[in-house]
Image (cartoon, rainbow, N blue to C red; front, side, top):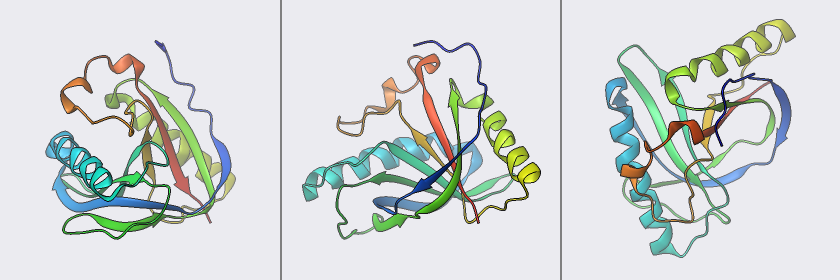
Length: 166
């Protein structure tokens, strides 16, 4: 599927809490791609080792995002909670109301989706309730991840942006 443009329509959804396995660390913004390329196979391998099934696509949640560093959580929703080990943490994505939008294509224009959510928050008088996250529908969590293939055709990438709201 090739999508020429992004309308960035914003919708309100009610989310159920979701158990996850994740790796959270502060990384340099310039190293985001490398960090994801290392974390996703580690999460997938741990999931396989523990016999856990994915409950949805991979996500990245930015707890803070500065000019040079970001506190970044890369995670995998799982069907049932399982204990973490080492750098892999057991946790939960929050439930409750959230505003969402979709982005199609490469990451260099993802800021437009964030801007759409920011504009919606401002005009609706609503406030964020914690950090947002990006859900990567173009990475199949049931398959052994191959980071080399992720950049093959960015026109096929589908990313949902989720921002919990008060």
